[in-house]
Structure formats: structure tokens, C-alpha cells
Length: 199
Image (cartoon, rainbow, N blue to C red; front, side, top):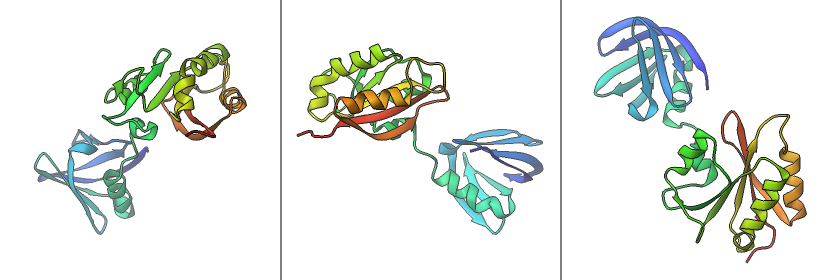
């Protein structure tokens, strides 16, 4: 998210000028008051004119942000969806994993899921070549024909054995359609596919 402001901070009675950074999941304060506060620890977020007010561990905090106060409050109250949520993974989702998961963000997203080959409600395939892409389709064929969606996870950028065009072309040739895209991390992206005609 990367928004930042030099502003006055009142942290439970201690007042100082700080550099405040609004990141994806936290606020960072630098200067005379140094804090790193995850959004999930911030309570009672509200604004009063140009001031952002909230509580952290029972302590009252106020940042004088000017016209940005409302936007910061909205960002804290409505953080972006987690990768697990973007992929459709919950603590009740049974996920079949094909290939080696070599991305920390993806491992974190899978941590809450039940990993199993049978009775999967979602398939996640990590692929790095046309061969592994074809192998994933062969391995998952029976489940795919039952309507189970598959996420194809592959490396971003140039210089890799497969790219978005390769993945889309091959799966469309096999009668599948892509229904979603998700950025996994700085290195990986994912496309979700399902058969056009499933029961």
C-alpha cells in the first residue's frame, strides 16, 4: 500500500513528530515514537476532522494526518484479502497439492487447509514446465471432470519455461476455462480453471 506521512502523533499522552507508514497489514511509526502495529492489534478506529484515532493494547493513539485520515481509517478497517481468501482456502477446505510448493506465501495460505488427495474441493498445482503442466492435468483428470477447480501456480516474468499464454492455451485446448487470477507473491502468480461442462 505504501502510503506515508510526516505527522504529529499522540501515543497515550506522549506527543512527537513521526514519520507514519501505512503498509498492507500494519502501521509503522518512525522518529521519536517508534512502533510497528499490525492491523489486527488496532481497535476502535475512527476519525475526527484531520485526526486518525485508535487504540492499541488499551492505549489511545492519535495521528494528525490531514485529509488522508479517512483513507487510512478505511484501509485499516478493510485490509486487502489474504492469499488464502483469494484462492478460496478456509480451514474447512480440502486441498490437493500437485508438485512442490516452494513459496512461503503459498505455504502460509495452505497452512489452514486440510491437505489430502481424496475428496478435495480444490486442487493447487505448482508447475514450471509444459511437462509438469500436462502431468498435473493427467493426475487431476478424474477430479477435474467432477467439477473440482484447479489453480495453476507458476513463476512470473520472462525467461521461464511456461508463462500465462502457455498455461491458458493448454488448458483451453483441454476444454477448461480460466475463471480467476491471483498474485501469489513477488515471484509467483496463479490462474484458476474449471471444465466448461461439469455436472
